[in-house]
Length: 384
Image 1 (cartoon, rainbow, N blue to C red):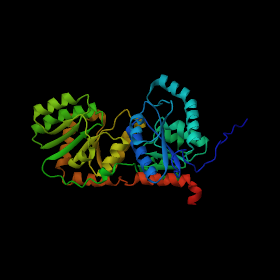
Image 2 (cartoon, one colour):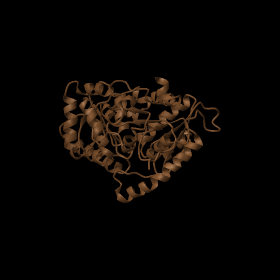
Image 3 (cartoon, rainbow, N blue to C red):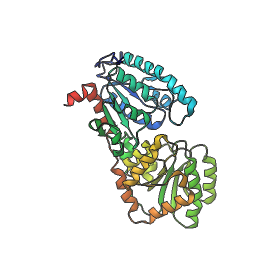
Image 4 (cartoon, rainbow, N blue to C red):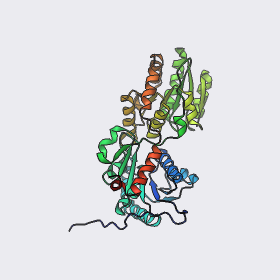
């Protein structure tokens, strides 16, 4: 017997009841990490600026539960867990949850009647995008990494459009549906002026808001080497809360120049002060480096799903925008030699910065909003 999925609802140009006559309503989804949520929020802001309504579908456990409510964006929760690197018990639980999560998402689509769906990927996006396909709502994917995540790879064939940041991701999506939009980044990063290295080199080390034990240990071990070899360095080091006390004490004892802090409130300002950035290679970090035109030493998080951080770093390294140092190789000695070699090579940092800028795409949120409008208005039929 042939089984056919019946599409229950046709696309409608309607707004959420009580939204004051918004032109269209859009569902945004993707969560778990800031790398999924921050770009989606940027797109939601742009949609609202254009007179549309937006709501977000996520989980209570994901970072979206903290980041979305302050934006006054309606947030709806579904129950779903991850599938990558979670162990067999969580995998079975997620598979068990999937039908109910799709049903939850379908109820939300019937309630809000979105004209199109925007997905940043991540485990929460799977049920929402599948529900959108069943109910014939066009899906626009944004893939921020060189190696697409599982949810976006599975949804690639049913998506109306795919917004990419790296050319390496093209092979995973239908060629006639992709566009290189880049990833939405705060405008402050694009406004950072070029900084010509001179005098004491300023190095920013950051492993993200929680810090990175590997980068923290390598940074601390390198301080003695820089002092012993009389290499003038000023440090801005974001440690995260767990390692802060230890590193701050060592920094003071060695009399190093700069600052060690558990968290940097104004990251664009820290970027503006730095000549070189040492960090992980998540999509958000790479997009900020590109927007600011900053040379970098990238150490991918080795347990990232599908090695997407490694693929991001490889793309930046291949373009001459970064030096790639694997996590297992990032030691104090390796950091010392890599930083010193870049500092001593005439014009190296400037060339890397220029290479990084080729990945920068200002207006990514605006273009994503335009694509959503196109799909809400008839999509590919209208363009043809």
